[in-house]
Image (cartoon, rainbow, N blue to C red):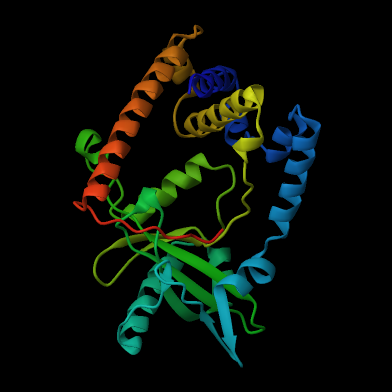
Length: 301
């Protein structure tokens, strides 16, 4: 945590000297991480991982894993309890989905609307989300172009920010739009299908492609230096995002040139880790006593 804070502070200091446009176009490419990897074997492994990740296209990799075909028809594979089709009236349900998609389409840039129009919705399924979004609704939407080229989108429910209790109501009426606005201003390259909509029940959603190119970091292969380097990199990426959405000079001035901020974050992280262990012990005890029911499921890669 201290290394993350150090990377953040130092990156913010360097970005405070850049022009506004230079800050906007600043990137931290994964190729630079590979180039700066000290261990030769780990460097080669990361380069191979990047090549494989780039080849994992929807059509060649994810489509066969997530979609089943029955002759000329295509359907998202049920994989309960992680992925399943809702038990509802198909006609009414899909009509409400299509209405939400019309609203979603209007949030895309004009050229992306033309691209989206080339695909037709053929199936929808519910997807169980991870810990960070537990309790929210998430859906997978399967689209096909006339030549059966697939497009898989994910619609995730966006609830009000936890910061609203302290910072006031969001400037955005739709929380999906709030999430999209945040992603667009912080990310150097956003999903071309990133947009938002509202369901018939009044729930806010943001929409994006189901899978992006992802590379596993594999921390079990790192030595102490590698772990510190990656931690600093994470801080640098966060600093770049905050420099785009805020004022790098003001933030850097607040952090100062000493390591006081770094150490404070490190101390907070240790205290937070201690509390997390206590919380987990309490949860485990509650499960063991039968007070809380728990189940273990194996998620797909």
